[in-house]
Image 1: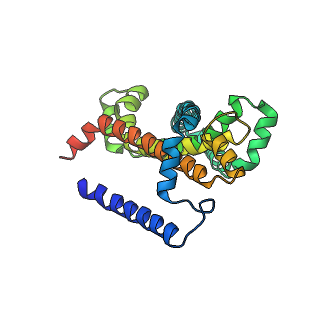
Image 2: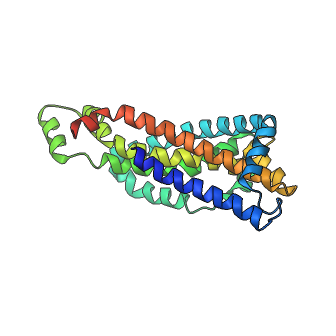
Image 3: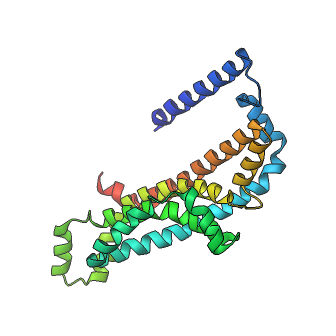
Length: 250
C-alpha cells in the first residue's frame, strides 16, 4: 500500500519542483505562469476570500451528487427489472451524454431561470450516467447458478434482488460512484458559470477576467482537492461495505 502511494507522490513532488525552478530560471512573468510557491502564498494569505466560495461549491456538488445517485439508481433498477424498457431507454441514456453541456446550459437558464434548478440539472446530467451504467452492468454479473439456486429455495424476485443481485453489484456500483463523485465537483463549477453569485467557478471567472493567474490556479487547486476528498470518501465507504467480499477471497 505504501509503495503504491509513494510513487505518485514522488512524481508529483518532482513535477512541482521542476515547475518552481523553471519559472524562476526562465523568469516567467507571474501573470503568465506563477510559481507553486506564489500560488500557495495566495491561497494562504487570502483564505477568507475563498472560504465562502468553497462552501457554496461543496453544497451544490453534494446536493447534485445525491440527486444523481437517486436518479441513476432508479433508472438502473427500472432497466434491470423491466428488460423490455431497456431496449427503448438505453439508447436515450447514451444520447444524453452526447449533448454538449456548454450548449445546453444557456437553454436551462432560459427554461428554469438563474436559481439552483439549472445548476443541479447540469450536475445530474454529468453524474447520473456512470452510476446508471455501472449499476446495470453490476446487476448482470450475478451468477446464474446462484439465482437458480435461490429460485429453487422459493425466493421471490424481491428477495433475489436484495439478497443476491444487489450485494454482488456493489463493486460495480462503487466504481460508478467514484467516477461520479469527481464529476460532481466539475459539474458544480461548470454550472456556476451560468451566473451564480458565489462558488469556485465564479471566483475562477473573476480571476481570469482580471488576469490574476495565481488566483485561477488557486481555484484549480481547490477543485482538485475537493475531487480527491469526494473520491476518498467513496473509497472508504466501499471498503466498509465490501468487507465481506475481501473476506470471501481470503
